[in-house]
Image (cartoon, rainbow, N blue to C red):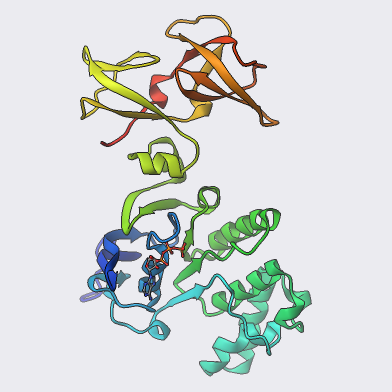
Amino acid sequence: MIGTKVQKGVEGLRLEGLRKRFGEVEVLRGVSLEVRKGEFFTLLGPSGCGKTTLLRLVGGFEVPDAGRVLLSGRDITGLPAHLRPVNTVFQNYALFPHLTVYENVAFGLRSRRFPEGEVRARVEYALGLLRLESLVHRYPHQLSGGQKQRVALARALVNEPEVLLLDEPMSALDAKLRAEVQVELRNLQRRLGATFILVTHDQEEAMAVSDRIGVMEAGTLLQVGTPEEVYERPRTRFVAEFLGVANLIPARRKDGGVETPYGLFPLRPPWEEGLLALRPERVEVHLEPVPGSSPAQVRQVVYRGAYLEAFLDPPLRVRTPLRLAPGQEVHVRLPVEGLVILDE
Ligand code: ATP
């Protein structure tokens, strides 16, 4: 069809060079990103890095100083929030206190003057999806945190948004409930095939639910990848450390490879002197020397239940099922495929 040709790759959401400044502070410094249709994408970063501001630009609650927001190839940068096929679930749920669960979920459809029959069908579907049928007559103050959270989700989902934005929706839940809601959210997103964009500072949450993660720091998007990519192949020290415990091993170029306190490795970094990252669980710990191992001393041991965490000298953090004791000598092999060259 003429005029409706959709370019490859513009089906989802596309952010181009987004900049936003509040007074003196440049909160977003040129963020570009593509989120695919039907993808569960998470913006992960510490407090104040700009992830909520980025979400608000997508939702239409803020206007960028520069850059564009495109949805399915259409420029929606200046479109007001209520005209976008985008819904947001806020951190505080923002339920109407004087309305029942049913009325809260129906509210948006009724204000858009949907026929009552369709309102009922859509609301019942959403309530069923989120297992809220038995709570329809309750008011928000009669609900637990997790139940309120589910009502807020149902209220967003009845509108069948193309894109659902989730701003730390699980931060008010305790750890056990949060884990349950994460699984629910993930299953829900798969069943609906909708695009979900979640904002969180919790790296475990990000890894549990996402197809891809974008790691942010100080208004810039540092790295985008699958949970496995950002965890296993962090590009910078910040990403390596933000996504869990990482060993940062000093290295310098030597004889066509790099030299570290744990031996020589056939790597070719772009720098003369820098850091290699290695996850503690990747380190092999042996009681006797093995080919390629080097000796180390156990400085401190922490019992973690499923495994033992040991701090070695030269400095290295490891996880092992071995029963180690401080002062003991061990032999350590760093698998070269687990060593990640970090940018300067
Ligand atoms: P958090 O997880 O704490 O919400 P965040 O990564 O979501 O952090 P933002 O909420 O986007 O970060 O805020 C980024 C920076 O912009 C912060 O320093 C914040 O104080 C500032 N900021 C956000 N909104 C405004 C505003 N309307 N006016 C002035 N400054 C703002």
